[in-house]
Image 1 (cartoon, rainbow over the protein chains, first blue to last red):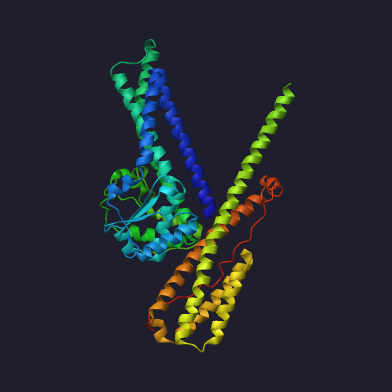
Image 2 (cartoon, each protein chain N blue to C red):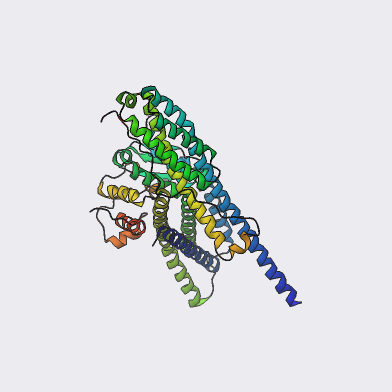
Length: 303
Length: 185
């Protein structure tokens, strides 16, 4: 597929995943209303709303505080500034996002912020030491693509939905335990209750799986967007290859913000099976990402 | 009675389509214009830098008058360029002239070591990268803008409302200005 086709396909798949999500949330809400009391839905809606507002505004500086990122000085990192300014122009963004440096030997980068105006980018010292200019450009273009594609906004929304589903499930489980349901008589009532409880147990997991699927889809989209922005898919592919060969685990990466790094900061050490583990990854496997870039940009990496 | 409802519904759909399409065209056109503004900023930075560069080189290599001449002429042409296609052509000329100037300066080690010269070279390299980035983005926006105008059904709306296709800014076969750093041979 060409870059443009890849970008389109990724956006469509995100849409389908979100619809699936909405269906899941709707189904759970329906179960809540049918088996228990409909008025609970209002309570859940209010809680979800408050949670969403909080996440929306907190998603910015909170991340920087959590990872120990410090604002970069132009005099100290001239190459970094040159690259981020160039990539901002190539991405057609109005404002160069503030750039932070994390003192960590493991190479990694992330972008945060709810819109291009409020966005900022962070890189580790390990990344700056490892990458040459083309590769650094690819990485920063990938991060800026997340910002430009409003991925932070999307993933925040998805996280809130997952939280809501988990909340509803928790609620209903407690109610089932304490017998707060509508008693529709006989076997029908018990079966409905049983189905409801099973659904409640599965729903949060399903929600998380969908969330991770969306995260992976957006990573592919950011890769394709970055290649389009820089006109140099090979630069990003080489960066990914270098990341693949590097074995260090990023120390300052709490699980909650893992999905925003360019590659999964968690090293899954021993695996049950790569497919199973793959479902729980926020990022697609680096081999796949490199292969997709090779296909669309027409080059082949050595080795 | 029913027929009037149907007519009204169809009319509403058509109006909605017109509004959405018009807004989309405006948005794409603005993106292209912003893209052009970015290019313009870099082109101006370069034409502003050229006199300084010429002065510094003249300080060490005063007799290379032909090279200075072609650079100055190319600069004037670039400043006067009116449309993207003309500006792209002028940009190629200026790039070529600057390349020759830099090649000439390699024969003068004192020039190559001078701090002013190094700073100007660095800025020139910065401009080259940013110009390439701006050109890439601009051409992408022009591609989108022109494509939308050419496809059905948008093409029905585009012409009557005064939208016109834009010119691309040069091709990728343009030779970049080669800046090499360091006084080592």
